[in-house]
Image 1 (cartoon, rainbow, N blue to C red):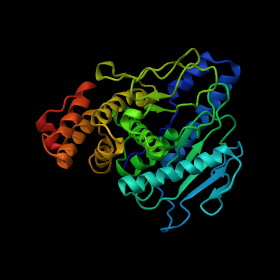
Image 2: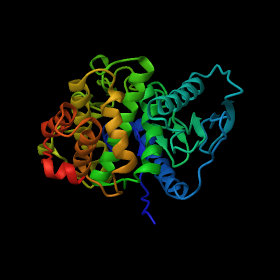
Image 3: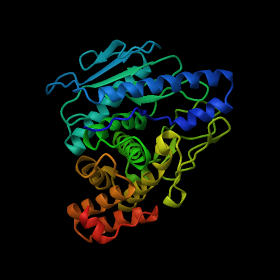
Length: 354
C-alpha cells in the first residue's frame, strides 16, 4: 500500500504564508494563521480521500459541478451549477466551472484522457471556502478555492493556470503517486505547474514563445510587488515584496534549496524542472503540449515511482523522447540539453535504461 502523507497540495506555498504571518499586519497574521490551520486539516482529509474510490460519471453525464461554501468550511457546500444548470452571476462560480470544463476538454483532446483519473472522475469544485481563505487546494477528490484576503491575494479562480494546477494534482495522485516531500514532492508541484501552463496556453491558443509562462498571474492584490506566484521562464523573479518576501525559486541544481520547510522545499525547488520544461518547449517551438507535453505526460503515466527524484524524471523524459521521436534525434537532444542547462546531465546509457 502506498504511504500517503498529510501534505497540502496547494498553489500557495507554506513559506509564503509564513512570511506574511511575520511581516504582515495583525489582520494578515490572523488570516494566514487560519489559512495554515485549515490547510493542514484539508491535507489530512486528502490522505483519507486518496484511499476512497472517486465518484465517476457515465459518458455524457454531468461531469462538472460547482458548490458554494458560503464562507464556511463545510464541503462541498451548497450546490450552484452543473452541466444542466449553467447560469450564475457569481464570477468565481463561472470561472471554476469554465476552468474545469477547459481542463476536461484539454485532457480529452490532447491526451485522450477521460477526466483527471482517466476513468471519468466527476470534477467537483467549491468556491468561497472559508473566510478570506488564502489558498486554492486539491483535497484528494475535489478542488477548493478561497476568496483571498483582499490585501495580499484576490480570488484564486482568476487565473486558469491555477485551476489547471489543482486539477493536475489529481492526475499525479492517480498515475504516479509521487510522495509530497523533497524531490518527489517538487516533481509533484512541477507537474501541476506544467499542466497548468499548458492548460492556459491551450485555452488562449498560445504557442510556447507567445506565453508569459506565469503561474498565478493576477492573483496578487493591488499594491503587492509581484506579477505572479511563479515564473517558469525565470524562476526567482516572480515577486519581491516586503510582505511576501523575495521569490526563492532556483532555476539550477547548484542553487537547490535544502530545507525542512514546505515539505522539503516542494514549491521552491520545483523551479528547476519548471525551467527545464520552459527551455525545452521554447527550443522546440509550436504548441507546448504537442511535443514537450506528450513526453512529460507519458512519463507521469508510466515511468515514475512514488519516490522518483529529479534525475529519475530527467532520465525518463530523455528515454521517452528517444522512443517517440527517434534515438539520437533532434527532440531527444533538445530534452537532454534542457536538463543539462539546469544542472542535470543524462548520459546515453542512463536514458536507455530509464
